[in-house]
Length: 297
View 1 (tube, helix red, strand yellow):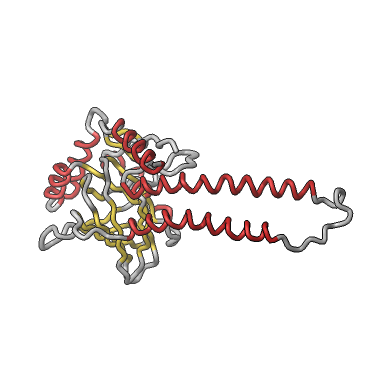
View 2 (cartoon, rainbow, N blue to C red):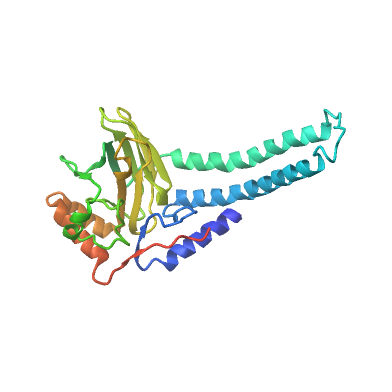
C-alpha cells in the first residue's frame, strides 16, 4: 500500500508539471534523489523511503544503547564490573533481529534488481553508447544501411551562443553537451554500453532514469529505460576515468514521437540543422523548457 501510494503521488506531481518540458539536473545543496522520470526510478525512490523506516529506528536504538552504556556502566557507577558473560535472551534477540531486518530489505531489493536487469524483449529503440576519453559516441541501431552516429562533447562556454544554449538554468555549465541523445517519450529504450578497445572503464549514468552501468573496453553491457515525460535530462560518467573525468557529461532530450521522427529523418543528412530545429521547437520563444523542481521525499 505504501508503494502504491508513493507511486500515485509521484505520478500526480508529474501530471501537475506536464504542460512543459523539464531540465532534470543536480541542485545546489541537494540531499535527495532527482525526480523520477521512469518506472524503475520511481521504484528506487520508494525503496529509499522504505529503507529509512529501518535505518532511522536502528540508528536511534544504537545511539540510546551507547548513551546508556556510557552512563550506567561507567567506572564511577560500577567500581566492581559485572561477571556476566552470557544472556540467552539477548543473544537470540541480536541474532534473530538483524536476520529479520535483512530479510525485509532483501525481498524488495531483489525485486528491484530483477526489474532493472530484465531486459525488454522487443524494445522500441536501441542505442549503442561508446565511451572514450573523454566523450560519448551514440549510434542508433536499425536506422538503415548507414546507422545514424555522432559524438557528444562537453559544450564550451564560447560555443553556447552558436548552439543556442545560453540559458544556464536549462543548459548548465559542465553538463551541457553539443549533441544530446534524442529519444521518444513513453518508448522502451535499450542501451548497449561499451568503451573503446584501447580505453579505460567508464560508466553510463542517468540519475532521473535510475540507470548506471559500466562501459568496459571489449565488453558489451546492456540496460534499458522508459522515460515517462518529455524533458532534458543530465547525467555523467560515473567511473574515475582520467584527468577529464568531470568533463564527460551525458545529456538526453526526450521529446514526443513526432518530433523524434522528424529529428531522426533530418539528422541523417544535416545533424547540426536537425538539432537547431529541435532546440527551437522545444525551447521556443515562449520558453516551454523549465527547470524541474525536486519532488518532495
